[in-house]
Image 1 (tube, helix red, strand yellow):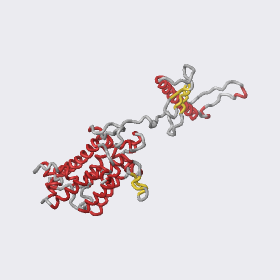
Image 2 (spheres, helix red, strand yellow):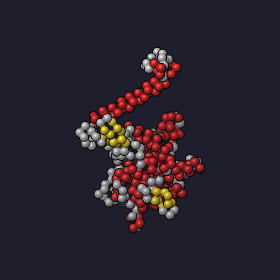
Image 3 (cartoon, helix red, strand yellow):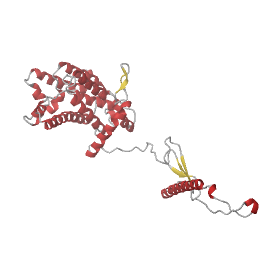
Image 4 (cartoon, one colour):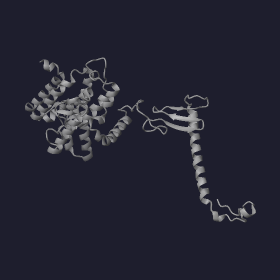
Length: 368
């Protein structure tokens, strides 16, 4: 019994899984009552309970055993979360899966006019499992799932790995196989659980039962590691980032996500700073403007004869003056080059020989 006390989450999920599965042998047409059927929920009937029961309902014994096995394994990593915060997270994840799936099939019905989309039974435990995978990713981060069997797979890759394996089963065995039937729940939970844990879950540092105290990194470091793209291999980031940025900007416009905060520690690049971080020196008429590796600007000599930083207005004036001098120098070089090309000896006849007369040369024609 002590083992079950160490895994309270296992009991809370195991009991409804067994009860709802046993109803398959007690009720006729159990799928239409317990599973999520869009028509039965909001149109022909008011089976509102299936918004919750659908995520705990299974009809196949093999799938049920797989769910229980994964639940037993993952429950040891979660421990005792905060009841209030984790309870809200758990409830909202279930509702997001069922409501999102209902909206999806209702939209397909509106688009195609086929009533069969309103009668599709939706059920499966994988949406809840995905929310647990995402939660322990927030707790353990770069920890290895199994250092011996899976030495290169960390908890950061666990949610995407679970999603990928379920997708592979659908591609190989078809969309009607027992492992792929609740893929829609898994995908919705994949997006929602990350979003909720990233922006809405409240972590209390003073409570030792909460995940923020189970990691040794600082909060900013954890937030950086919990980025969405870190669930995928580094090589795929170049493909994934444009889609994640577009999705994030859309959520910001809707008001669901907060705007990104620019970190002051990240380097900024401008025209006075080299990409390698070394100082850049610009010579002006009043001295040398030096841009250091930290982005600061100083001058070697200013109007006061010291090396104190120039005011912003003086810096702007110096930049404009240096730019004007550079443009003037380029223009003078261009005119000098044109004058040299235009000098032609045959166009300058001499009226008298300078050696014989000693008189100055009379130029009859000068072409510029």
